[in-house]
Image (cartoon, rainbow, N blue to C red; front, side, top):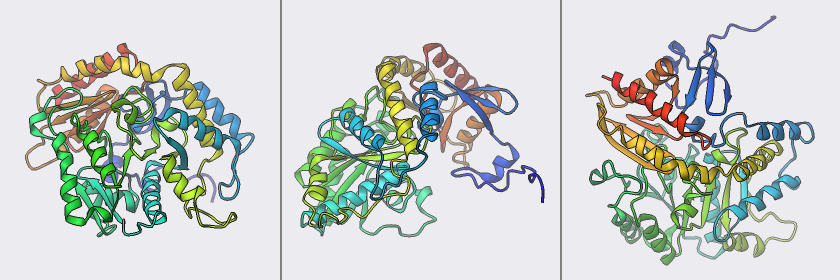
Length: 442
């Protein structure tokens, strides 16, 4: 057999995509630069989603591209079990300096899903090492998204993601979500809802606080459609978990690296968890990479005080591609770009402009709510009768094919997360195109 089979789009099974519909109307991207994608027919499509919440430094940044190219020609791979390479330690130290408090240790993996499962396993191992092996329960939140591993699905609370896969992990429970009707069209952190954190006390009463290992939440729930935390909510969760000896994990796969105008949501919102999961913006989406930032005390108990002999493994966990040389090179270059171009401060300065233009859509047809924090925004649409999600899907298709705009939709909610390098002129273009999309929806 010679040559290649015709590209009928059959062989690749796309994730989180209606594959049958995609083959009828493919949305194929062949190039990217700055805040723009390029299609096979030569159109320039404005990226209003930073790829998938990840390309914070924009596309094709020359410093990041060159760092990857250079590393690939020198060290293509180094095994992370029993061996290592210098960049892994350099990156961990850079992250230690970026994140607040004593989140001093980085455990590397390859995605947000792996980061979540890693953090949950560390939490369970930590309590067992301290002689509290009865702490096996994990608590997530309704409508939360924590990736697609069995651990992340278990603590996640999006029903459509869970229902095909059986009972998942035992002993998991969920807090209520924080989206309240009374907070519709609130700007930034909504004023009502801090008391929703008190539901944790009810769960602890029901299960016994001594059985709970960790609580995991997104500081800003992103994938479900941007739910900013009510004023005082995260602070209350921190107080309750600390009082009961429960670890608090922030899933910052979306919010870290400038999305809220700071290195992390923990820094931006002034609440320090025990662990933070990372991915996406860590390499600006260029090479898959994830990680977990861990407080000094957790690392001390599991590593420095391990009863294993010196040649023994303290934590039997890891991945073939943990701290892959290309990923660490991309991450180090990305951190340099964030620092040298002051992108976190740039995002903070752009956020008020983003908020004004976003909330100007309030009176558009079918809009039932608007939410925002930092450079994260959501336009929630009224669902079509008997067809939830159809109007949102139509908006995504119309944006791409009719207005050269790439947006993310989740159900009937349009989620916006422009790259941090977006300028005011490009932001104006983004909203002008989105307004045109909304005018066309039936």
